[in-house]
Every structure is written in structure tokens, then in C-alpha cells.
Amino acid sequence: MGFFGLVNAPKVLSSSHQDFRALVLVFLEGGNDSFNMIVPSGSGSMRAEYDRGRRFLALPSERLQLLNLKDAASLYDGSSSSDFGLHPACQNLAGMFNSGEMSVICNVGNLIVPTNSQQFSDAAVKLPPRLFSHADQQRQFQSEPTNPFQYGWGGRLAEMLSDYNTDVSLSPLISVSGLNSFQVSRDSLVNPYTMGTNGVVSLAAFNGDRKALVEAGMDSVNGSSHLMAQKYQDVFQSARKAETIVSGTFERAEASGVDYEGIFNAAGLSDTRVSRQLKTVAKMIGGRPSESNRRPVYFVKMNGFDTHQNMLADHATLMAELDAALGAFRNVLKQQGDFDQVLTYVGSEFGRTFTPNGDDEGSGTDHGWGGHALAMGGMVQGSRFFGTYPTLDLNNPLDPGRGRWIPTTSNSQCAASIAHWMGVPQSDVGKIFPSLANFASPFEANSNLDFIRL
Image 1 (cartoon, rainbow, N blue to C red):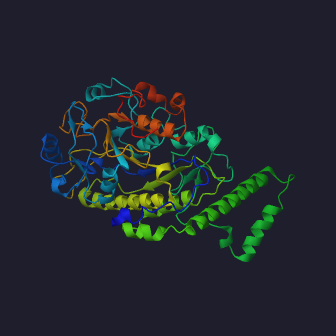
Image 2: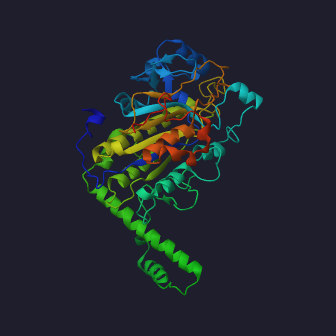
Image 3: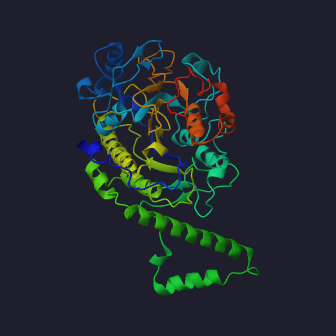
């Protein structure tokens, strides 16, 4: 039956409420070289431009995982093409794309207004602050270029969807990769809950005497205690409640009959950090209690994409790890019956230069601008490329130098579509993304950004 067929079984975990939607952001930290993730195939002019620009970093067309597009991709020069493939290591992703479960959003990036290379050179338009800087572009990708230090769009989303998230014992913002800008709320009404890939560190891990001492100290706090002690007790009690919820969630998931270990092992590379993170997210979703929050937002991070050298080999390893992790995550969600309710969005702070930074296969690529994103889930308009794929001839109007392609779609446009699917009215998405007013609405019929079925 194949890797996918083995897990396309009937739903194992029954959802206790139908109105459940979850967002999982998989952030590729360091700047994914997505023009070697999504690659022109065949022998046409775009493939020739790819070979000419990438030189010894070009992936052979015959090795690509070929994609079957339902509609030809729109190109920047006004033409179209259906000749594309995924990186050779991305067999699972290609299977999902070709079966209608994944789509590509082309040449996405941080933008404040639509921009071309002449405007960039002339400083004629407002640009995202500190372009090509990892820290700054990561923060802007996870927030909004006009308000990069104020809130993350995941955090703001949770605030605006508070009516769906009524369980105050556990935050709807859950990170399995530490603190991040994405989940910072504007008004501090919702704080992210960070956890490891094995769940929470329980107080039960303390020895008997130490555990008893901590609990006695917390129990002794009362209304006449110092305000700091009372505050600490509140935090302690909240942590204990969250621990109980998470532990119960893991227990329900692991007792459900879903073979998490087997499914991730079948995908290969199951002990990578990104696989462990996505396995944890799958358990949190699959074992959720009936009274759980109905609009959770998860943060997953994969490191290592800053490929200034040895790009071909290092990127192949990263693509294989990502492919295995997302393939297994898809299969677990299918078996849980949650695939149609969980949107997985994969993106990076920027793309990379189209031209190499050296003269041999040990070379790499440098910080770029636009790059491709992936959307996965049962709600996705799959087997399609959305937005506009750039023409790959150097020195075109999207090239400010070395193939640092200027984005043709802003991150805010993509994120606005996601926010609306999660439940934010179209009329309110501008409250999260002020720069959206500078672009064509992603909700217009001719926007070519309708990658989610609403």
C-alpha cells in the first residue's frame, strides 16, 4: 500500500467538538534556499535560466520529484509553466502535493509595499527594516514588517480568537521550540506555553523531600503574604494545572491506538529534532480533552538553513529531514482524523541568492529575500502554485543583485488568509497586518492567493 496507504485508516481518535482548527507554523531558521526546494524541470527556457544562474549548484532535472500541477503556475513575465519538481529528497512532499494535500506559495517575503529593483536602487519606496539580517527578518516574518517589535501574528491571532479559546488552564499558544516572536501577544492577554518534545518537566521528578518542601512552601502562601510570593504561587499553580492537562493529553494520545513511534519510524529519520517536535504536536492535537481550546497555534522550528558553504550536501540533508517529518506528521494526523482541521505552514525568514558565492560544489549561497512557502492540510487547494513565480534571468525587474528576488507576495498576504481561515473576519485581518492595505487583497477572486478553501 505504500507509506501513505498504511495510515489512511478510519479515524481513531474521535474529536469531541467539530469546530476545531489548529495552525502549525514550521519555521525554517537561517534562510531556506527554496529555489533548490522548488525547481524548474524539463528543457524549457526557465530551466535554462535556472541552470545558467545556479551553475554547479543546479539540481539535475532527471533527479527531481516531479510535480503534477492542476493549473499552470503564473510567472512574473506574464507566461505560465507546469514544469516543476521538488528537491530529490522530498518524495513524501511530492506525494502530498500530487494527491492534492499540499500547495506552494511562490516567492513570498517581508514587504511593506510592492517593490521592484529600480525602486529598491533609488530608495523610492519604504523597505522592510534591516533587510538580509537574520534576526530582523525572522522577527518580521513572525510579526508584521510595520510593527516588528510589538507582537507576533500568532500571538495577536490568539487574542482575537479568545472566544474559541476558553480553557484558561493551558494557553492556546504552544511552542515546542522555545520562546519566539511569532507567539508574542500585543496586549499580553495570552502568553505562550513552552514545552519539550517529551512533554513537561513534572514536579514529580523531584525527590520526595524536595517535592514536599516546594509544595509546603506554596501551600503556606496566603492573602497576607508578600505580593511577590502570591504572584509566584499563582504561576506555580498555573504550571501545575498545565502539567496535569498536558500529561493527560499525552496519556490519551498514547492509549488511542495510534502508533506514533511506528509511523514516524516508517518515515525514516525519526530522531531528528523536527520529527520529535511534530510528533509532540500530533499528540497534543490527538489527545486533546473535550473542553480544550479550539484554535491552538503551535510553533515548530528547524535550524541549519544558513548555507553559506557546502550548500548542496547540507541542504539535501535538511530537505530529507523535513520531508520525513512532514510525511509522518501528515500520516499521524490522517489516522487521528485531524488532517482536515490542521493547517501546517512552512516558511523561512528569507530565501537565498540565486547565484553561488564561490566557484565549486563546496560553495553556498548568501542571504536573499523572497522564497517559497508550503501549505499542507485537508483545507488546502492542493496541487497548485499560488502567487507569482519569478522569472529566473538575472538583472530582471525583481533582481536587486545576485538573484535576491524581490518578493511578489508579501508574508502579510499569506498570513491574512491563514488568519481568516482560523476565524478572524476579513474586515479585521488588517488589525493584525497593517501593511495589508498596501497590497491587493488576498480575498479577491483574481488574487491567486486562495490557497485555503474557506
